[in-house]
Amino acid sequence: MKLEPEEIKAIITRLKRANGHLASVIRMLEEGSECEDALTQLAAVNKAVGRGGYALVASGLQKCLVEGGPDSVDAKKMEKLFLALA
Image 1 (cartoon, one colour):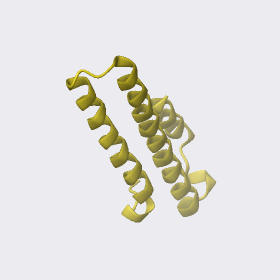
Image 2 (cartoon, rainbow, N blue to C red):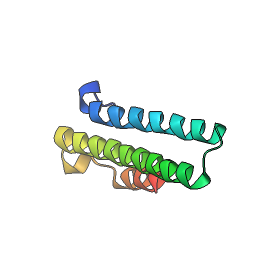
Image 3 (tube, one colour):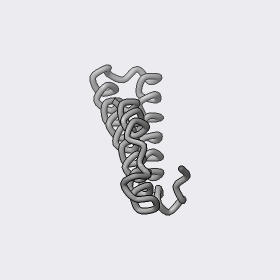
Image 4 (cartoon, rainbow, N blue to C red):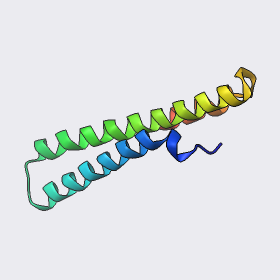
């Protein structure tokens, strides 16, 4: 299923922010920053990307339910998508 840009605008914004933070982590490592500081930032990037993924799956699920009703949702496919993010 394809989501419309307005349906995923917040997710795109979240992932762009995470991308910027990841660039900062890379820069920190290149500049010789403390490992602890870099790992703290990397953990934040990881969490932001994960939340973006879950929000994407949730948006897709919501669209399926609205357009096709409960019977249109492939439970196995949804489970696979959620587990891919775990």
